[in-house]
Length: 226
Image (cartoon, rainbow, N blue to C red; front, side, top):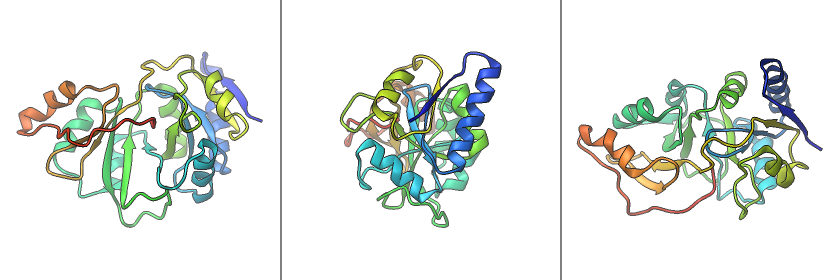
């Protein structure tokens, strides 16, 4: 059974984040708020915890979770051969609803699933999520729902679907955006749109056009991950 922690006051938030951080450290799963939708998270470097996350959602290794970070500078530790235009994207949209699919650093020892050498990274724009990430380091975080069901935008909905699988639920009220992040594949000379979410193509292109490039849109897909 999970324990739900409110985060309305500074004292409640401190208690909640400490409980969630301890749960992550012992390999348990947590539900955390983000600016897009609620997520189910695990230590990205704990193979068993990531496996448990996928099992909780009813997913296989073919759908690895994204990784959330607390600072844009962490991207360099997780991703290799990052194109120069990515710096402009992270400057404009992080923290925020933009997930970047990068080539992962070959030295990383984690196992997120069948990633084919990639890692999807995002810095969420949510104080509670960032405070937790500052204590835990990178978390593997997927949308807080059973596979095939809508992503939870409130803690109670996430707990209703995943409560038996998680130790701690952080309740920060309704998700500010209620829509999943936009996902770009940034392994090439131009970023490729994988999923249209809370961030529009026009918003992204407004940053890219001064650099002489725009989004490729030939491979857009739907998805549920944060």
